[in-house]
Image (cartoon, rainbow, N blue to C red; front, side, top):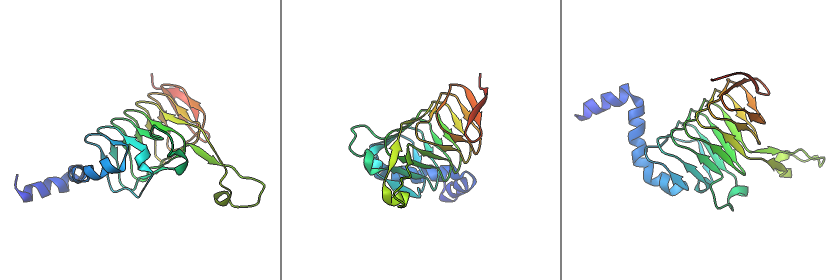
Amino acid sequence: MSLSGQLRVWREEPLKAVAAEARLMRPRRLRQFASFGESSILHRPMWLYGTAHASVGSNCLLMHQAWLSVERSAWDDDVPALRIGDRVTLRPFFAVSASFSIDIEDGVSIGASSSVYDSNHVVRASGRSILDDGGSTVAAVRIGAGSWIGDRVTVLAGADIGTNCTIGAGAVVRGTIPDNSIAVGIPARVIGNND
């Protein structure tokens, strides 16, 4: 294919251009992450921190402006604190902060501007800012295989979302969402199932 033909393909199918850029970035990603799967794309992230303690599976698409952070408190563990399975799609402006353990299983899709956190700041009576006080609680987060998380969803510490779940846009998830559930709202509550 001629150069002009390749440029036309990239203009008409921008994901092909992004995939070409990802192939060039692969050696860097392999140095940055505990593991970074074949054919995975991390496109122009906004922030990467502690990614030596994060793993990304194969055939993932982590779209632009992602914020991926493994906090220093998780750096001493032998296993990655942030585990992203195979065929995971994270839409633009996704943010994750792993202080303990976050597992995003195979085939999960997470919408734009969504966030996942495994820690909560604790306000103490000291009168100091929560950022200065340093108090937090942590609890593992799991998003089960095949689940679809809508846009602007917040998943909080201790959330356990089952397999094949649908979480509606704007929801805030705490606690357990059973397999095959449809959940919406603040806090998210089950309103149906995907059976």
